Image (tube, rainbow, N blue to C red; front, side):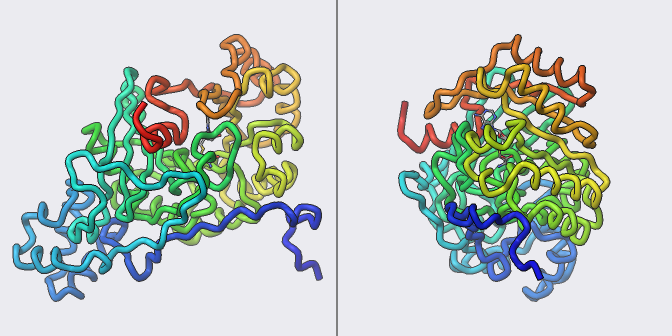
Length: 411
Ligand code: SAH
């Protein structure tokens, strides 16, 4: 019997493994954010309170977006004070951070706060601190948020017509090390917990004073290395913030052995898998893809596409493919022709993303003419295609850039 995982070619096992994430121990330390109404009612009851206190907590956490227990003025003062006295290690204490060499993980001091000192009331709710805010001329707002253990994550609010899309992070840093990505330069510190993901959506809602309509997991991190928390966060966003799964996109560069499993678990956990899966393809052949994405060596393109087909078969949803256009490298007519051939007959949609320059790399932004020619070449071959316009370029729009600039000192 074949026991070796399908994608693990023996020749590839010598490659450095993708580190597995150290998620906080959620079962033991689940803060209130992320819990549904029934769970909050159970929690209130376990605290010796009437069940309706759970409904009040739900309304103030998700409806009003309070940041502290003291702010929930409908709760009896004595109870609030008692809960506020809990030790910081009580209800919420994320696991030890994974500090990678060369990465400056400690967060800068919070805006209008005392920094990542223990704050029992905040820790109980599970809200992050707003460390920094940066607004671009086109209306895009980027937030740097501080976790309870003093790390920082990026989240972006992108308004467009009557949409407000929140681009959320799923990890602190990222282990995938894609060459064009600023986040990948610092390695992975740890995965985010459910409350830290949901908090990003609430923080953008508060900062922009507007209800988010869409959420994309395209910030820092590789969502498929943290899929339990990602699915739980999607569940919470739909159940407690009234979003629809169809307004949510999960983007992955591909992790072996995870896609069909994600589809099955989404069906189990959420009852249906209607969020959009976006796969970061970036190259029409294995050789070029490996050059741009080192981890692709352990996940041949054919296997990735086969897993995408299985995902489509299980969920009935078409997959989006993201293709970053790097001037002169993968944006030529022959690349477009090869990509069209690769995706022929596949239920998919291609999103072209002109490269956002990052400091550490020499890649070129493609010319507008090359972007248009690439789009036209795909459309002519009957591939559904769109171009994602860059937003917030004047404020470090590329994934991970703001955090890297702020953490490496003033400039
Ligand atoms: N790890 C996941 C999600 C995070 S990246 C993934 O790779 O899909 C989200 C998207 O932003 C990906 O398509 C990624 O390739 C793209 N991206 C990263 N750095 C970029 C840059 N400098 N310019 C343009 N797009 C970038």
